[in-house]
Length: 93
Image 1 (tube, rainbow, N blue to C red):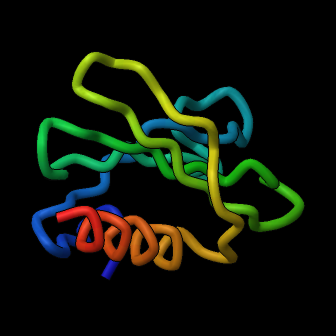
Image 2 (image 1 turned 180 degrees about the vertical axis):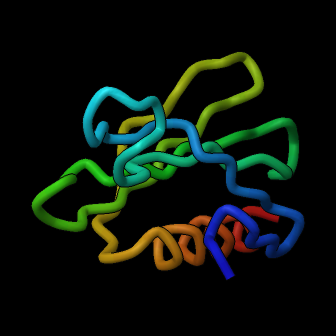
């Protein structure tokens, strides 16, 4: 199942940044997702800050007032970053 179709704990991932492979839009590797369905009006971004040469997925929280946290974590996969985000939300609930 593609990661963009994953729904866990009400979270949904929406592709929102890509590397380009030639002139076509959205033609390369996905390097960031917006996470929807989070509690208390929060959203988050998961981004591979090491792309294209290495995997370094990180998390940024976006508060309801649109202020953002710094990037946190160092995860090998987007799935690992999503799992860490979900665990953090469960701890804060």
